[in-house]
Image (cartoon, rainbow, N blue to C red; front, side):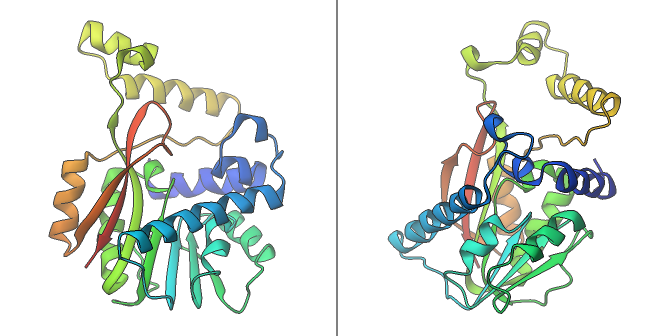
Length: 254
Protein backbone atom coordinates (compact mmCIF):
# COMPACT_ATOMS: atom_id res chain seq x y z
CA UNK A 1 0.00 0.00 0.00
CA UNK A 2 1.57 3.30 -1.06
CA UNK A 3 1.52 6.45 1.04
CA UNK A 4 -1.39 8.06 -0.83
CA UNK A 5 -3.58 5.00 -0.39
CA UNK A 6 -2.62 4.84 3.28
CA UNK A 7 -3.59 8.48 3.75
CA UNK A 8 -6.89 7.96 1.95
CA UNK A 9 -7.83 5.04 4.20
CA UNK A 10 -6.85 6.80 7.43
CA UNK A 11 -8.73 9.92 6.40
CA UNK A 12 -11.82 7.79 5.91
CA UNK A 13 -11.36 6.06 9.25
CA UNK A 14 -11.05 9.50 10.83
CA UNK A 15 -14.41 10.46 9.40
CA UNK A 16 -16.28 7.23 10.10
CA UNK A 17 -15.05 5.81 13.42
CA UNK A 18 -11.82 7.49 14.56
CA UNK A 19 -11.50 6.15 18.09
CA UNK A 20 -12.29 2.55 17.19
CA UNK A 21 -9.86 2.63 14.24
CA UNK A 22 -7.11 3.47 16.73
CA UNK A 23 -8.14 1.01 19.47
CA UNK A 24 -10.14 -1.71 17.74
CA UNK A 25 -12.05 -3.22 20.64
CA UNK A 26 -15.08 -4.99 19.19
CA UNK A 27 -17.42 -3.60 21.85
CA UNK A 28 -16.39 -0.06 20.89
CA UNK A 29 -17.10 -0.25 17.17
CA UNK A 30 -19.54 2.21 15.59
CA UNK A 31 -18.40 5.16 17.71
CA UNK A 32 -19.04 3.51 21.08
CA UNK A 33 -15.86 4.74 22.75
CA UNK A 34 -16.42 7.33 25.44
CA UNK A 35 -13.84 10.10 25.13
CA UNK A 36 -12.81 10.05 28.79
CA UNK A 37 -12.33 6.28 28.73
CA UNK A 38 -10.44 6.42 25.45
CA UNK A 39 -7.98 9.09 26.59
CA UNK A 40 -7.54 7.35 29.95
CA UNK A 41 -6.04 4.36 28.09
CA UNK A 42 -3.43 6.70 26.66
CA UNK A 43 -2.54 8.14 30.04
CA UNK A 44 -2.15 4.66 31.51
CA UNK A 45 0.03 3.57 28.60
CA UNK A 46 2.36 6.56 28.82
CA UNK A 47 2.58 6.25 32.60
CA UNK A 48 3.72 2.65 32.19
CA UNK A 49 6.32 3.56 29.56
CA UNK A 50 7.76 6.40 31.62
CA UNK A 51 7.84 4.26 34.74
CA UNK A 52 9.68 1.52 32.87
CA UNK A 53 12.25 3.93 31.40
CA UNK A 54 12.93 5.24 34.88
CA UNK A 55 13.25 1.70 36.19
CA UNK A 56 15.96 0.82 33.63
CA UNK A 57 17.74 4.13 34.31
CA UNK A 58 16.96 5.67 30.92
CA UNK A 59 14.38 8.40 31.60
CA UNK A 60 14.40 10.97 28.78
CA UNK A 61 14.93 14.68 29.27
CA UNK A 62 11.54 16.38 29.55
CA UNK A 63 11.73 19.19 27.02
CA UNK A 64 10.57 17.98 23.59
CA UNK A 65 8.63 14.86 22.54
CA UNK A 66 6.97 13.67 19.36
CA UNK A 67 4.10 11.18 18.97
CA UNK A 68 4.23 9.64 15.47
CA UNK A 69 0.86 8.38 14.22
CA UNK A 70 -0.94 10.42 16.84
CA UNK A 71 -4.50 10.02 15.56
CA UNK A 72 -6.78 12.21 17.66
CA UNK A 73 -4.10 12.66 20.34
CA UNK A 74 -4.72 9.74 22.70
CA UNK A 75 -1.02 9.46 23.59
CA UNK A 76 0.01 13.00 22.67
CA UNK A 77 -2.17 14.48 25.38
CA UNK A 78 -0.74 12.03 27.91
CA UNK A 79 2.82 12.98 26.94
CA UNK A 80 1.99 16.60 27.79
CA UNK A 81 1.97 15.54 31.44
CA UNK A 82 5.68 14.74 31.15
CA UNK A 83 7.13 17.08 28.51
CA UNK A 84 7.24 20.84 28.11
CA UNK A 85 6.44 20.65 24.39
CA UNK A 86 4.86 17.80 22.44
CA UNK A 87 4.28 17.39 18.70
CA UNK A 88 1.72 14.95 17.31
CA UNK A 89 2.17 13.81 13.70
CA UNK A 90 -0.38 11.97 11.59
CA UNK A 91 -1.00 11.26 7.93
CA UNK A 92 -4.76 11.94 8.14
CA UNK A 93 -6.12 15.46 8.12
CA UNK A 94 -9.43 14.18 9.49
CA UNK A 95 -7.62 12.85 12.56
CA UNK A 96 -5.65 16.04 13.11
CA UNK A 97 -8.80 18.16 12.87
CA UNK A 98 -10.27 16.23 15.79
CA UNK A 99 -6.97 16.22 17.67
CA UNK A 100 -6.93 20.02 17.53
CA UNK A 101 -10.54 20.19 18.67
CA UNK A 102 -9.82 17.88 21.62
CA UNK A 103 -6.49 19.45 22.57
CA UNK A 104 -6.46 20.20 26.30
CA UNK A 105 -2.91 21.59 26.18
CA UNK A 106 -2.84 24.13 23.33
CA UNK A 107 0.19 25.89 24.82
CA UNK A 108 2.16 22.64 24.93
CA UNK A 109 0.83 20.42 22.16
CA UNK A 110 1.01 21.07 18.41
CA UNK A 111 -0.42 18.74 15.77
CA UNK A 112 0.88 18.27 12.21
CA UNK A 113 -0.48 16.60 9.09
CA UNK A 114 2.43 14.86 7.38
CA UNK A 115 1.84 12.95 4.15
CA UNK A 116 5.51 12.57 3.23
CA UNK A 117 7.66 9.45 3.76
CA UNK A 118 9.96 11.56 5.94
CA UNK A 119 9.92 13.99 8.86
CA UNK A 120 11.54 16.98 7.19
CA UNK A 121 9.21 19.28 9.11
CA UNK A 122 11.62 18.72 12.04
CA UNK A 123 15.33 19.54 12.19
CA UNK A 124 18.13 17.20 13.24
CA UNK A 125 18.76 16.41 16.91
CA UNK A 126 15.55 18.07 18.12
CA UNK A 127 13.63 15.66 20.36
CA UNK A 128 14.36 14.15 23.74
CA UNK A 129 11.72 11.48 23.18
CA UNK A 130 10.24 9.91 20.03
CA UNK A 131 7.31 7.54 20.52
CA UNK A 132 5.15 5.47 18.18
CA UNK A 133 2.95 2.40 18.70
CA UNK A 134 0.25 0.65 16.60
CA UNK A 135 1.32 2.79 13.64
CA UNK A 136 4.33 1.31 11.86
CA UNK A 137 2.50 -2.03 11.63
CA UNK A 138 0.17 -0.49 9.04
CA UNK A 139 2.94 1.03 6.90
CA UNK A 140 4.78 -0.76 4.10
CA UNK A 141 8.30 -1.87 5.17
CA UNK A 142 9.88 0.36 2.54
CA UNK A 143 8.41 3.37 4.32
CA UNK A 144 9.04 1.94 7.80
CA UNK A 145 12.77 1.87 7.10
CA UNK A 146 12.71 5.51 6.05
CA UNK A 147 10.79 6.55 9.15
CA UNK A 148 13.12 4.65 11.48
CA UNK A 149 16.03 6.53 9.96
CA UNK A 150 14.11 9.79 10.40
CA UNK A 151 13.30 9.03 14.04
CA UNK A 152 16.99 8.73 14.80
CA UNK A 153 17.81 11.83 12.77
CA UNK A 154 15.45 14.03 14.78
CA UNK A 155 16.37 12.40 18.12
CA UNK A 156 18.88 14.27 20.26
CA UNK A 157 22.09 12.45 21.19
CA UNK A 158 21.22 10.61 24.38
CA UNK A 159 17.49 10.86 23.63
CA UNK A 160 15.09 7.91 23.75
CA UNK A 161 13.15 6.37 20.87
CA UNK A 162 10.38 3.87 21.70
CA UNK A 163 8.59 2.10 18.86
CA UNK A 164 6.52 -1.04 18.36
CA UNK A 165 6.60 -3.30 15.31
CA UNK A 166 5.56 -6.89 14.51
CA UNK A 167 8.52 -9.17 13.86
CA UNK A 168 6.89 -12.28 12.39
CA UNK A 169 3.76 -14.39 12.37
CA UNK A 170 2.92 -16.41 15.46
CA UNK A 171 3.52 -20.02 14.39
CA UNK A 172 1.97 -21.63 17.45
CA UNK A 173 -0.18 -24.27 15.69
CA UNK A 174 -3.38 -24.05 17.84
CA UNK A 175 -3.66 -20.33 17.07
CA UNK A 176 -2.96 -20.62 13.35
CA UNK A 177 -5.56 -19.14 11.07
CA UNK A 178 -7.05 -21.15 8.22
CA UNK A 179 -4.75 -19.26 5.86
CA UNK A 180 -1.64 -20.35 7.75
CA UNK A 181 -2.86 -23.94 7.99
CA UNK A 182 -3.25 -24.01 4.23
CA UNK A 183 0.29 -22.73 3.87
CA UNK A 184 1.62 -25.29 6.34
CA UNK A 185 -0.04 -28.14 4.44
CA UNK A 186 0.59 -26.98 0.87
CA UNK A 187 3.78 -25.02 1.37
CA UNK A 188 3.35 -22.76 -1.63
CA UNK A 189 0.54 -20.35 -0.70
CA UNK A 190 1.20 -16.96 0.85
CA UNK A 191 -1.45 -16.54 3.59
CA UNK A 192 -1.02 -12.77 3.88
CA UNK A 193 -1.67 -12.38 0.17
CA UNK A 194 -4.86 -14.45 0.38
CA UNK A 195 -6.07 -12.78 3.57
CA UNK A 196 -5.28 -9.25 2.42
CA UNK A 197 -6.89 -9.80 -0.96
CA UNK A 198 -10.06 -11.03 0.72
CA UNK A 199 -10.31 -8.04 3.06
CA UNK A 200 -9.29 -5.61 0.32
CA UNK A 201 -12.06 -6.84 -2.00
CA UNK A 202 -14.54 -6.88 0.87
CA UNK A 203 -13.67 -3.28 1.76
CA UNK A 204 -14.10 -2.17 -1.84
CA UNK A 205 -17.48 -3.92 -2.19
CA UNK A 206 -18.69 -2.36 1.07
CA UNK A 207 -17.02 1.01 0.32
CA UNK A 208 -15.04 0.82 3.54
CA UNK A 209 -11.44 1.87 4.31
CA UNK A 210 -8.90 -0.91 4.64
CA UNK A 211 -5.52 -1.34 6.33
CA UNK A 212 -3.17 -4.30 6.24
CA UNK A 213 -0.53 -5.52 8.66
CA UNK A 214 3.19 -5.38 7.92
CA UNK A 215 6.27 -6.61 9.75
CA UNK A 216 10.04 -6.49 9.75
CA UNK A 217 11.95 -9.35 11.45
CA UNK A 218 13.60 -8.40 14.72
CA UNK A 219 17.09 -9.24 13.45
CA UNK A 220 16.59 -6.92 10.47
CA UNK A 221 15.31 -4.12 12.73
CA UNK A 222 18.44 -4.44 14.85
CA UNK A 223 20.61 -4.16 11.74
CA UNK A 224 18.70 -1.09 10.56
CA UNK A 225 18.93 0.69 13.91
CA UNK A 226 22.68 0.07 14.08
CA UNK A 227 23.17 1.29 10.51
CA UNK A 228 21.24 4.49 11.31
CA UNK A 229 23.46 5.29 14.29
CA UNK A 230 21.14 4.01 17.01
CA UNK A 231 21.66 1.59 19.86
CA UNK A 232 18.96 -0.77 21.13
CA UNK A 233 18.81 -0.58 24.92
CA UNK A 234 16.11 -3.18 25.37
CA UNK A 235 13.35 -5.10 23.60
CA UNK A 236 10.04 -6.07 25.21
CA UNK A 237 7.45 -8.60 23.96
CA UNK A 238 4.35 -6.70 22.92
CA UNK A 239 0.76 -7.77 22.19
CA UNK A 240 -0.46 -4.70 20.32
CA UNK A 241 -0.51 -6.48 16.94
CA UNK A 242 -2.83 -9.23 18.17
CA UNK A 243 -2.40 -12.96 18.67
CA UNK A 244 -1.47 -13.67 15.04
CA UNK A 245 1.80 -11.76 15.39
CA UNK A 246 4.94 -11.73 17.50
CA UNK A 247 5.33 -8.02 18.17
CA UNK A 248 8.25 -6.21 19.78
CA UNK A 249 8.60 -2.89 21.58
CA UNK A 250 12.07 -1.43 21.01
CA UNK A 251 13.82 1.05 23.30
CA UNK A 252 16.60 2.87 21.47
CA UNK A 253 19.05 5.68 22.03
CA UNK A 254 21.83 7.33 20.00
